[in-house]
Amino acid sequence: MTGTTLLSELPRILAALFLVVLAAGVSRWQQLDLEKQMLVAVVRAFIQLTLIGYALNIIFAADNPAAILLILAVMTSIASYTSGKRGQGTPHATRVAALAITFGAALTLGLLVGLRVFTFTAQQIIPIAGMVIGNSMNVCSLVMRRMKDEIKGRQLEIETALALGATRQQAVRPHLKTALQSGMMPIVDSTKTVGLIQLPGAMTGMILAGASPLEAVQLQMIVMYMLIGAAALTGLAAAWLSYRQFFTASHQLVDA
Image (cartoon, rainbow, N blue to C red; front, top):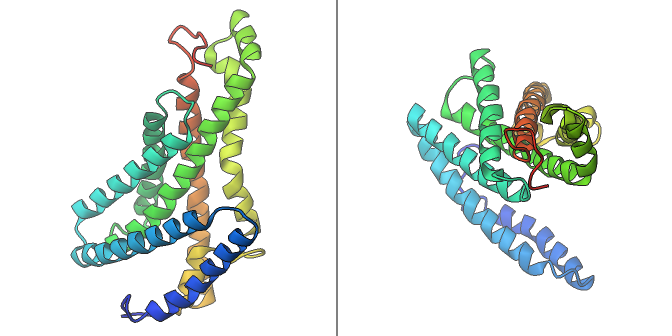
């Protein structure tokens, strides 16, 4: 598909759209009331992907480090806002998400560049950053939600531990572990079954673009390993930051 334009691929896109029409038909038949949401999702996806496609063409051609950093900052900001919304119930959820996602994504991307797995060019960093930041967003959301549920559901247990002289970290340590496991398990499970149940996106994309299966496998290995690392770093930061929002500096439980 090298050198193709959006207009040249429009017939294929419209053909694939038939599956959305089919899904809308199922929704209407079963009275799920999802047709409008599907329409909005399809239109938004088309507009957003078209715009980002043309924008990336310009950015890839310029290959300017400042432009790359600007794109990464925008991606991180949107991910932080989205994760903060999902983590409602955690005090200062958006700020927690911003710090955790930035920490996990920046350290992961920094190591990948530092170890020469990827070079700091627009064509390599932006797609990889999209996967890392998107994964970090999901992990952060899961950890914050689970941390909130653990603290609210175990309030009496935590307050008892505090009354017996435990610090806030000691009182929530088992729940922090549970929250971190909750955030990391999806990517760990996905890595266990990769290649057996599904061919992941990066691998599928390379094969469809004409790369050999072995080349696609090599890239997919790197992607899965980096996503596990990003999940661990982001999840740890999210768990550590989110639980602290429920305590005062004097180790008293609040807002639970």
